[in-house]
Length: 324
Image 1 (tube, rainbow, N blue to C red):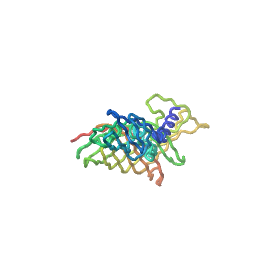
Image 2: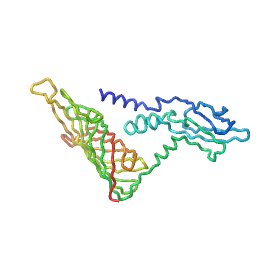
Image 3: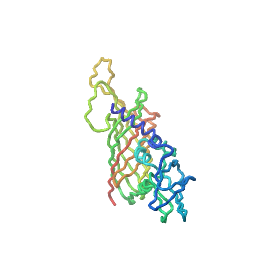
Image 4: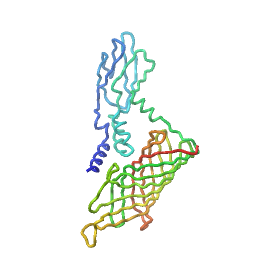
């Protein structure tokens, strides 16, 4: 039941927050602390204060403040709205489809809920508060000096496994938790190489808890070793490289006895080579959250040949720099 609820939540994320919850238009309060002010917006003139219906758009909004003696022009910058940032952005690493949907929709924009116009303002460009905060957030740099080493410990929190165990067909499974260790070396301030070992598993619950299982059940896990080259852009980093992965698929049935109509317990492994890509968003000096995609294409055991398998993990990472 819990896994179904988690899957349902994932679907909601995939359908995108801004697209669902925002209309094409919304009401914005326009006001001024100066008396007897009017504002011209989209060829209509309003006595302030007023609630003005504006259309969401990627284009900036032109506003003119009108008094008996002056006309002062302002440009209100189009801003990503709260639904896009808080509802989607943090999930976009794990659910990139949701962010992609919103990034094609004008519903992702707004000009703020309140707009204050000042006849004595020296700046004609107005940025909604969330846009200023968003720009400050993205522009924050976590610079690590060239020559620095860093140890990383992470939890592959949510994992999707696709495996093709020999003579068993294609298998897919979603589960939680695991452990990963890595060592990074920064050969430039914004570039580093990383060697890592990861062991994602398919625990049924998204939180640690005792869990009893009855009858037979399938389980999947993987042990992988990867080498990646990584580029850092302020809070964001992107890496690419190679991996060697041991995929394990198993049927567990502790009550099975021969002969029996129940599914026979068995375990199958494959050793494979493939690629690894990762994208991380850094939230503090030490903490990052990212998506790691590790497909494999060529098996070396138990039989050589091409076979596509993968592990996709939503990874929560802690970084500890040293040696600088």
